[in-house]
Image 1 (cartoon, helix red, strand yellow):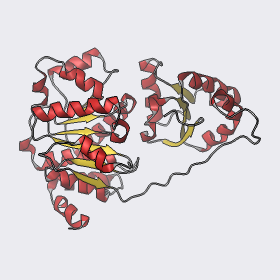
Image 2 (cartoon, one colour):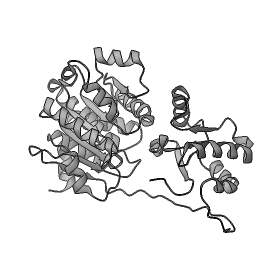
Image 3 (cartoon, rainbow, N blue to C red):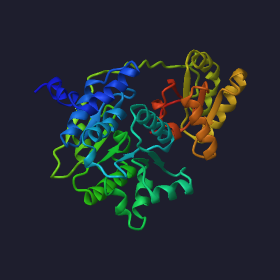
Image 4 (cartoon, rainbow, N blue to C red):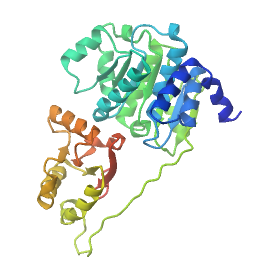
Length: 348
């Protein structure tokens, strides 16, 4: 059976029509891989969605739950319906905003909550009393939630757990934490649907087996046929000197970054260490004083409130450039960012 025949099934449902109307209001149409994800979820399946960054992987899984709810509201209770595991807390706020806006525009009064190291005590206590319909959470915070007294009550009506950026978590300690969390939730909710979201990945079968190793689940893989065009440009010195171009020596080329920043809407400048980010921030201001007020620095030691402000300014394109470390490693998901500069070679 062709993909077109598969997606025709979901297209005739009222939930799909509501979501398609929302896409149309934005001047867009759903990708085929998104429609396939919605149909597979409708069939009760679990699986892995693979698509390039920026092609709507989030909505492929998020709207799977939304459409299923709109089609079968009686199957859902009043409480947590979707857990969304994300490896980086810097993206959680942006992700939550996108979900909340979409829900409001289609007329669904679901609450989207965020729980990570930056979540206030008052917000955590509020969540304990009443969980949101969608909870965006890091692997570590999910395990801390398991430590709460009588925690199984939070997951009574849980339908799906989604693991974002699975290629980033796979094979790491945080990936193991995620696997353990899924196992725990699968024990509490045996019919739980498990979906992973990943950019292009080489070992697809292994990635799927690690994510969904359960004998009672026959997982599926949903692939995007759309390709993303990325232009990679190397910036090298006009003259190659005896010493290698690495680390702080690259600051000699800071002036060559200025026209790139000016031609872009928003640029992320990645460095490998916090020390390098501080150095480059000072160097860029010295070679381009006009960037004052439009240039920011982001790393793990920056105060939480300032980090949140920087992320907000990124989202609204009020910053021209941000010099950052792995604290914004997945920052290419910020909508206004159209250029990424890597200083030297990546650390990992």
